[in-house]
Amino acid sequence: MDYVRIAEEANGPIPRDVSPSYIWGVALEEWSRMAPDARIINLETSITHSDDYALKGINYRMSPENASCLAAASIDCSVLANNHILDWGRAGLVDTLATLEDLRVKTTGAGRNLGEAGAPAVLPIAGKGRVLVFSFASVTSGTPRQWAATREMAGVNLLKDLTEQTAIEIADQIVSFKQPGDIVVVSVHWGPNWGYDVPDEQIFFARALIDMADVSIVHGHSSHHPKPIEVYRNRLILYGCGDFLNDYEGIGGYEKYRGDLTLMYFADIHPMSKDLIALELVPLQTRQFRLTQPSSKDVAWLRETLDRESQKFETRVALTWDGTFAISWPTRSSSPALASARPAG
Image 1 (cartoon, rainbow, N blue to C red):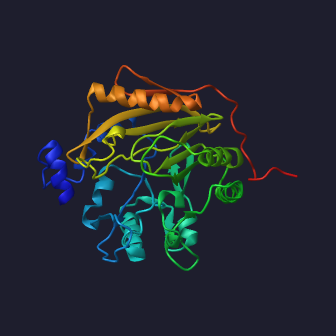
Image 2 (image 1 turned 135 degrees about the vertical axis):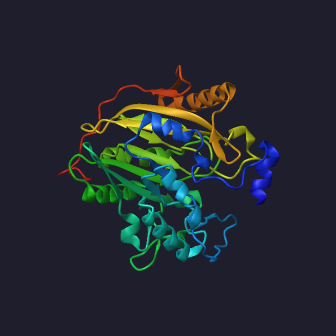
Image 3 (image 1 turned 135 degrees about the horizontal axis):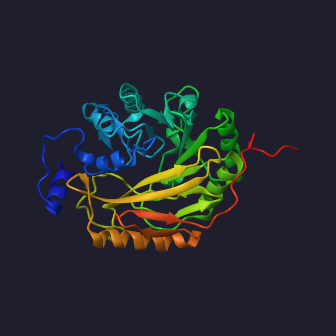
């Protein structure tokens, strides 16, 4: 409740008795307008009543009774490989998985054992084939190594490093699951919470997955604000999506990054080539624990910042007539569809 009090001091009273759809605010209108085939989020909290408190400093927990908020937004897939999913122990993770199963939300990145944690979420798209979503948590995000799933124990799909050998192993795993026509998304929780720097190892790793496993989207997160966007060989790399919803409203310390400003990412992927056709971003703002329309001044600041940081990857961000962002990039030859993660001898 302290978080609620701090948010109210910043932006006014927050109603206590609200519907499950309250937190999404105007985002629901944008989803209705765009009608995406799949809605994928990084769910960075446990859904549990477990009291198995992990000694790590900040622990997130959602009551299972409130998890219907995910259904209110028709979330299709929650990636779970991150540094908060075991905040309330392995019992909390098992509770989370059970709740999401009841809500018919697909999961990946954490499971009751390594096989379940490493398996992709399979999202059938009517008339367009399937989307496979793989999820990994890097130790660089603060995910404890002891949280790694094993053959016998629940945990996360842990990424111990971002080396070429690890990229090859993941590419082999992806290829073993893929069927002809599948579109692949790799979701990675990596790096610190603040700052625009993109380490060379992240750039190498994301590009390697595209080169070796025909990945269409690398969905990076952990940063509490949007980071640069790259389109590599006509494939999308989001180095840090920023938070969509959080409880930091009114908390000081990193105001220069404007963590209250958030984005919806709508990516159009060609069903045959698997290339990125278009990317539209919708800027929003968190106020009173829900998503609202930001001011034109805030929209301009966010566009300028994202454009400045993305230029190093030859990506540009332009404001459209309806207040959304359109992304442009130099056209490159597309990645070949690989039958194996390694080239034939």
